[in-house]
Length: 286
Image (tube, rainbow, N blue to C red; front, side, top):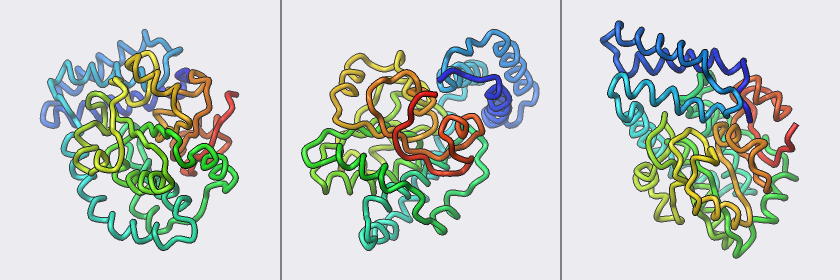
C-alpha cells in the first residue's frame, strides 16, 4: 500500500523517539536528526509503502548517530519476558477446546509489541483478558490450505511476538505442515532477525530463513529473488504484523492470510476493523 499524508505525523513521532533513544544525552544531535528528517520528508515518494519509508528514516538516524541496532536491548528483554510466560501459555493452548484458534489469538496479541508505532494497548493485559475474537470461517479457510503435507510460510514480525509465534508453529507442525518462518535480514526497529529466532528456539521447531529485507515489512523489491520464489511456491502464506500488511497490500497478487493488530485509523479503514482489534484472514484490495 502507498503511504498516506496521515502517515507523516507518525513518521515525525518515530523520528523524535529514535533520535532521543540513539542520543539520550545530546539534545543538539537529537535536533539535528529531527531537522534532517524534516528536510527529507519534503522529498518523500509517497507511492512507497510505510515500511520502505521507515527504512529511510532508520538509516538516517543510524548514519547521523552511529547507533547500530537501536533496539538490541529492548528485543532481548522482551524475548526473555515472554519466554518466562511460555510454559503457562503452552498449557493454555493444550487445554483449549480449539488449540489452533487459541494459538492464533495469542500470536496476534503478540503484534502489540511494536516499536514502530505508538501502541496504547498493553500486551500483558491483552493476554490476561484474552477472548475469542477471530472469525471461525476465516480460520477454517486457512486450515483447509494448512493441511498435512502443505508448505506454510510465516512472515514473522517483531521480537517478543516471535516467542508467541512458536505456539502457532507447534500447532501447524502437529498437523503435519512443513513450516518455514521468515525474519528480517538485518536489525530494523524491534523486528525479529535470525538472532532472535535462535534465542527463542524457533529454529528447533521449523525451518527459519531471512527474506533479505532491511525494512520493517516484506517490501518485495528489497527481498532476495530466491525468497520470492519461495513465497510463490508456498501452499499458504501467513503474514504477521501491520508492517507486512502495509508492504504486501496491493502488491502481492497471490492469496495471503494476514494476522495482526490494527494500530492506526488508516489500517482500520482498509480492514473494516477498529483500532486495537485483531485482523485475521484475506483482504481484498479496496
